[in-house]
Amino acid sequence: MAAVTRAGEPLLVARGLSKSFGRGARRKVAVQGVDLDIHRGDIYVLIGLSGSGKSTVLRMLNRLIDPTTGTVELDGQDLSDLTPKQLREVRNRRISMVFQHFALFPHRTVRENAAYGLRLRGVDKARAWDKADEALSIVGLADWGDAKPSELSGGMKQRVGLARALTTDADVILMDEPFSALDPLIRTEMQDLLVKLAHELGRTVVVVTHDLNEATQLGTHITLLAQGRVAQTGTAVDILTSPADDYVRRFVGEVDRARALKASDVLVPTAQWDQAVPEVTVDPGHTLAQVAARLGRSHGAAVTENGSLLGYVSTESVLSAVAHVEGRVA
Image (cartoon, rainbow, N blue to C red):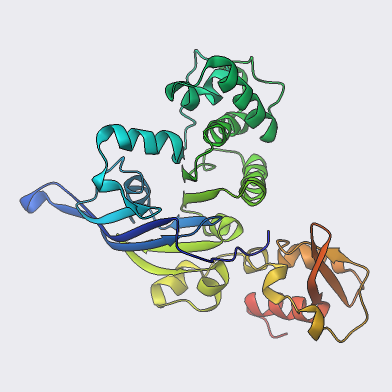
């Protein structure tokens, strides 16, 4: 996926988000002073160890949990100013949520589950089911509308959850550890599907994960939390190559950087390319490991997206970057 250009004002803004639970000696600070700027088209990842506050932050973004202090604004509207009815409307129409354990209604069909948000909104059954069938087709479940959740695999259930979010045409989709319960192969397929849909449909997605490899593969921007505070915010490349402190450096130490860095990270603009035009082509979102596997004996590859030439990557630059991030001398 090509890098998202963060033009204009952020869609979702958090300022000074803090959350405490309990009182007196039992008071526990879960989140303290978190700022976020989430732009349209971002896949924004919140990552951290267990207890770092990432799921609490996610739930404050749609006020499933009210912050102790701080604000959340959607398109400039402070969510704390909304009445309960208005807040329900925001959750139904503008900020949808996909849960880790699917949260499907077992007695309803797949189509009914996917259409649930629209039916809550008062949309008539025929129109809601048409929208649900369209979303199910997008996530690869076109033939499963009449099935019950008990007939589906874990990956298919997660697709239904994603279809339900897509059906509402929400501006923002919140996902809390959405793929952690899935087998590795299915998990990879769902990660690829999420990136594809976010890119093609222009959706803004906020994902919570504890897996740094997943974060770097999904995220256009990443916020790493430590004990409820922001340790670092940036792109995957920022965090992997310029860690803010020793904690971040240790946290990213085990990540597979050859899978995290992408062709777009070593891209040479067309005007600066001084070699013969290579026959090999790659996508800007291909990882350096994928690019290296495709290069073979070629001196480089053209980077294209939707038939448009974005630039080139040289074999030397790819191998040098892979060697560097693996700790070897190029």
